[in-house]
Amino acid sequence: MAATKMLLCSGLFLLVASMLHPSDFGVRYLAGWANAGVNYDTVPNINRLGFGVGFEAWFLKMIGLEIDVFYTDKGYQGYESEGYKDHDFAEISFPLLLKTRLFFDRASTLSLSVFGGGAYSRILSEMDRDWSFKRYDLGIIAGASLEKRLGNISLVLEGRYNWGLRYLSDEYMPSRFSFKTRTLFLLAGMNVHF
Image (cartoon, rainbow, N blue to C red; front, side, top):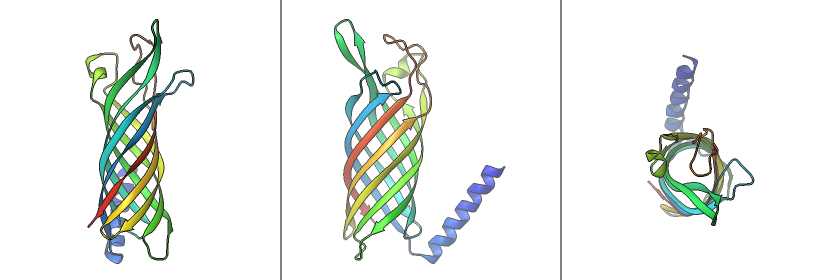
């Protein structure tokens, strides 16, 4: 009940704020490097490509929301008799992020933003066929982005860290250990404003 009241109050605040300040909406396209690993320091990470699209709304000049659909391969390197082997799986995630701008230049064309929020992620490949794997993950995301506005299009550089909260496997073959995902993203892309 308290969570419902909080969501309703937040929604009402954003509605009123958007009436008082012209809102800025955009569609973001991002792609880049993803360093994916697990919660064990002794297990090497893997490097993969991550990409996604998102919708952002700045209801106030300095406070906004973003919702994304993001795809990446995650996993780790496991040691086997022939050496290290990548154990990876595809994942699609749906982050919901609260954003705040820390800096605007005088012309309002360059901005630095920080963000944080949560994500629901669905495992799409390999793990779906193994009963010992969880089918979804929950995560916490934090990061920062630098944006240079050029008319209705902005160029974006972004870094984000996705910290998985669920143990995805109890007995993973062949490595046989339970793990949580950890992924660092370095991304570039564009934001189309409307």
